[in-house]
Image (cartoon, rainbow, N blue to C red):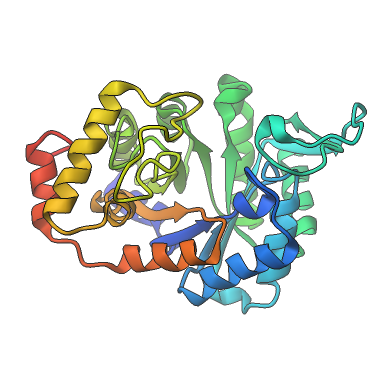
Length: 327
């Protein structure tokens, strides 16, 4: 891709530097009332956040419904909205009054997720998201976790379907969201994507995406939205806890030692660890935005303050010298 082509790709959509990932208002990990969810979204808006990301997967549509109800009260031209496709929500014939806690969402499991990477399935997912959101214009559409279903099918059918939706003017920009670097890099190299959401693979603690995803994005002019930048909460406090979650199990000793070294450098420069975690991905030339979650209004306010905090270049330089971040 030529430089002019890359500029055309990145110019399709401007994404604010800080966004809110709305999985929590889909009752991720714990139940929230409608009023509690509204207060979280209001805190995000009042803190200056103007990019909101959701997905059908989040709370079996609850996140989309709550976020849509909130954003309908705001001027449409003042925010960027993204959602995801790849999983359709259909009635669960085995529902017996239980909850979707197997997927960490505290909502009734009266619906089930059905993978569908076909062109008609992708279009149906978009239409159903519009209905749940109550908002017609979706700015950015991601294919969600393609490697969890069939990456080859995603490359062959789903990504071309996304490109066609963009060509038809149904959405402004398209991409994929994944926490697997190989899937992200393969998708960037095989399709004309605007943005990819890199979940947990390019953080202050670990940067596997720097090996293949970032170079692929530079070559193609694809932007990155960095998500899960707190590594399941490990970087959310200036005093890390050893019993914190990591992926689906315990934190390996090697990463714990690395985390302590990073925290020590941040303390030497009087920089809160969470502030460094939010701002680290934005030091890369291909990262356009950082999306953070939050299940309490105060967390959103604090994250916005961390995003705006002035961090001395000496911090990044020392972390690089110590081999803790890429030079």
